[in-house]
Image 1: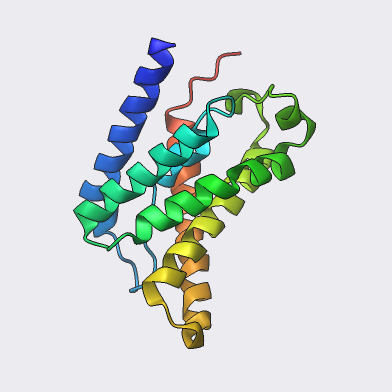
Image 2: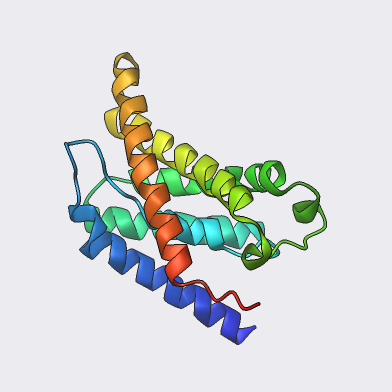
Length: 168
């Protein structure tokens, strides 16, 4: 149990540092921004307490907000993503999630991609909706969501592949 807590603590700190020091500086064409810290929400264990998971997700977003001076937008998007995650898990993995037998290292690539894609789009849509906060600019919100999501999904898959501990 202590090993599991330490792994998630290291992942939490590593993703915050990566987001704040590297990925927050990336801004391609004015609307492509990667938000790699959501990988913590994606990879968080399924069996853990949901209330503590939502609190830690909110804390993650709040810490990112403090460093990026974004006024709570990351905390809101992270909390919404954490709240919707069980429904996305059920949709993406079905019976495997229902029986609490889900291990991300044993899931095939297609299901992981669907899962990551849905969570990333939810996170980014929430983020850009609150950042722009103008319903008349919904096309701009959708454009930012689409392009930033594609970039974030690509980076998440790349990072998960690089740091994979899969042993067969």
